[in-house]
Image 1 (cartoon, one colour):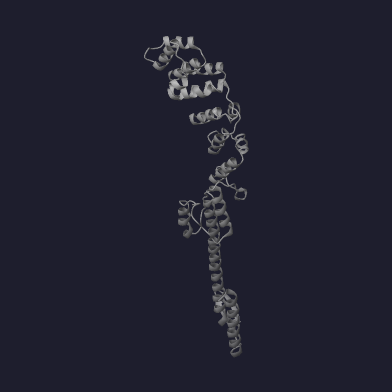
Image 2: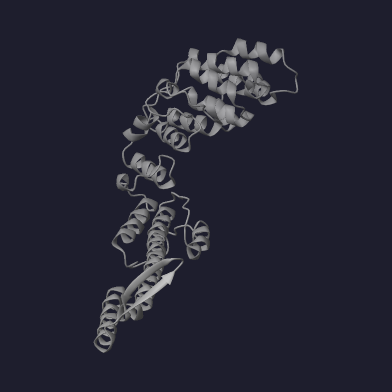
Length: 337
C-alpha cells in the first residue's frame, strides 16, 4: 500500500470511529496534567492516540522511503559510473571512480584487469554506443583511420597514438606535420613519426632539423636509400663523415659501402670520406685502400701498405704485386665484394 492510500484510509477510519463514539456519547472530559487542564469531547480523546500513531507511522514511512530513495539513486548513479568505467576501459583510458554501493566496488577493481581483444568476434553487445566503440577499435587495429574526437581521449592514449600512426602510413605528410609539434623527443608517437619520416625525407639536412638522435638502424636505412638509384635522398659529405664516425662496422661492411658509395660520390669526396673514417677506425682501412686502387691512387695505396705490418692487408699486397707485374684485374672480382 502506498503512503497516500495509507494516509487517506487511516484518516477515514479515525473520522468514522470518532463520529460513532460522538453519536453514542457527546460529553466532554477534562484531563489535568502538571497543573494544565485540557477539556475535549470524549470522541476526540478516543481518536487522539490513533491520530498520534498515524502521524508517527507516516513520519516513519517518509524517513525510510527517503532513505530508500537515496539508496536507489546511488545505485543508479553507480550503475552509470560502472558503464562509464567499462567504456573507458575499452578505450584504454582507465578512470578511477568512488562507488557508494558495496556491490560495485569489487567489479570496478576487477574491470581494470581486462583489456579489449580486437580478434574476438562480437556481433551485438545490445548497446549502440558500445557496438560503435568495438567497431572503431577493430578498425584502428586493422590499420584504418577513425575519428576519435568525440571520445575525448588523452594524447597519450594507445588508440590515439595507433590511429595517428595509421594516419601517417596513409598520408606521409602527416609524419612531418606531427614532428613539427613534438616537444618531447622521448614520446613514442614522436619516435614513430620520426622513423616514418626518414623513409620520405629528401635529404639528411631535412632530418637533422627535428633534432632526433639517429641510431645505427636508422643510419643503415638512410644509407640504403642513398644507395638506391631510384631514390632522390641526398647525403652531404660532412654528414656521412659524422654518422660513419658514430657507428662501428666490420671490414666487410665498410668494403661493401665503399663499393656502393664510389658510384654516388665523386672520387675526391669518396676518398675524403673513407680517409677520415679509416683514420679513426682501423676496420675501415681496407675500404679506403680499395678506393685508392679503384681510383688509380696506386702510390698512395703503396705508401699506406709500406707503413703497415706486412701481415696486414695481404690481399691488397698481392693485388699490388700483380699490378706491378703487369697483371690487370678488376678489384671487385679480386676481393669478391
